[in-house]
Image: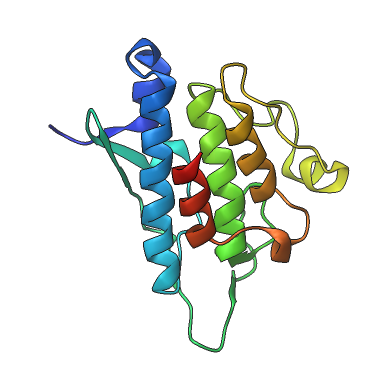
Length: 169
């Protein structure tokens, strides 16, 4: 099977993806991001549009164009000036990837609705807006999303913790 963007697949073929399959995809994405985290890589652009459907039961993380490696001394990467990235302040870390993992989950369980429709990145940061629970999403999953969106980056779980959380629910 050729790789398809999960975003496209969920938008146009949502009836083929019951919650149990989406949950399976969530565990695979968490495990893939855990792998990157243990090797000190920051993806910087995790989103449903960058998750590829490899088979009916398998997804893969894609689009590594913005990925950066961290030295053993650094815990974040600061982007050079004059580059525009939505919702971000130019500093990237594993915690910012965790935030986007929560958004990716939300996208998956809403069958790729647009997050924060009508709000700017500045409004989301300033007003502390959080996405609402997906209509069909389990409460346990939404609790995981909320942990990903903790205001303080240090309060967000690691991908190792997220892999365990998503697998055990």
